[in-house]
Image 1 (cartoon, rainbow, N blue to C red):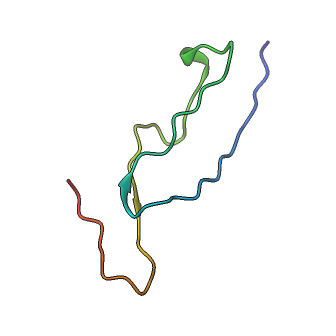
Image 2 (cartoon, rainbow, N blue to C red):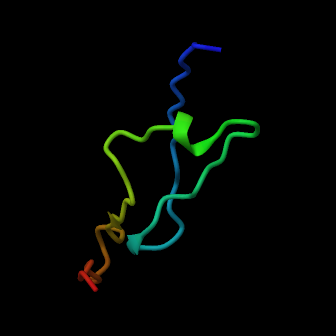
Length: 59
């Protein structure tokens, strides 16, 4: 009670384009006690490999 824990998550995307990061939950912790910096929802542009001709285009 009253303590703070900071959790960093590293993700490896499997596709290029605009993707949402995974939704993570903490058991027995209410949403009012969880903060995200910067505030979400987030949308991340994953660029294709350098030898590809694909691009991220906003929807």
